[in-house]
Length: 186
Image (cartoon, rainbow, N blue to C red; front, side, top):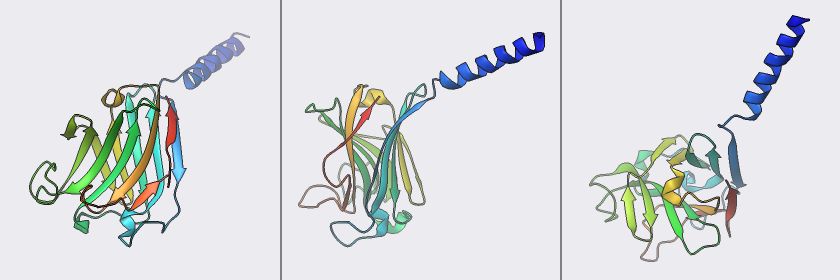
């Protein structure tokens, strides 16, 4: 009898820990058709899937792009970005950008010579190195503290890729979703 009670108590404790874990996640995902880029470019700029995940308890928003081909350092300039509207529906926008750039090509790039960097774009300017990131094959990820985006309860986002800096008539190559925004409720 005591063994049964002990088993029940242990089972309830384990179940409580699993269901009440602070490391739960909220995710918003959008799939994008392969080959729908605006102009001909490397498939490393063709978005297959875009995803934003908040890991509760970890204090991180993961921004992730899955691409049609691996990203290489020989692509020259490249930007894999998320446009974030936070709070949702407001006039406040942020750019969460992982880029391969050179100051000779884009003045706000952090250093001379091609290199990888993260950049947070806000209404007041660009902060280089504001968040961690990784580029692994056909996956580009940014790890952003929600406080950098106003730590809001609901945000809207869209993703895009570029093989030339924004401005001067340069347009993004691919979008996910192709129009509008995706909502992430935190």
